Length: 230
Image (cartoon, rainbow, N blue to C red; front, side):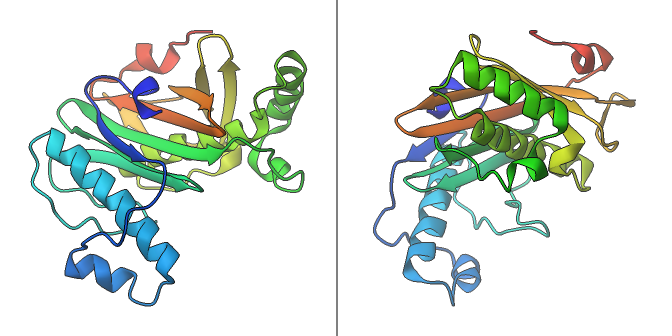
């Protein structure tokens, strides 16, 4: 799935289930020392994906520990993202000289709770979701909105190092191109001395899963921030 939403500069690996217990570094084992076996397997499999991804870039295996906001802490010179949901684990990495930051997210292709939707989607987005559901009911656009915003945040935080709430982002989807545009209402991300107000991403939905990705290039300027495929 990841190969459909990521550029060639990004190395990735994915699994549609968990391995038998993965060999973890001592520092990683300490993080899941009190976790239930299912969580340990999930934790290990997604890190195995991350190390396989780094191996494609010629990077030796290292511990991958959570940061202050749960974000993975990558070795110097590497940027990346990890995701896991029921039946899917994945990681994607790139060299920081090629990509500034990236975010990936996977979710089950199922409806989002009606209680959760107002906390995730702005009013204008909820109107768009209604229209998209009418034109293509095969995609759960509410869940896709959640996933896309998760990817935006995962790409945002390593650069901005500050909070980005669900309602700080407004999404527009292109169903045919399977892309999305995220309008950022929070200030914190700057490239070339200018605030970045828009980022774009890709999405795919198949086999009961949906996956989204946002890649922020190393050279982002005001033209990139204003660009759109819509």
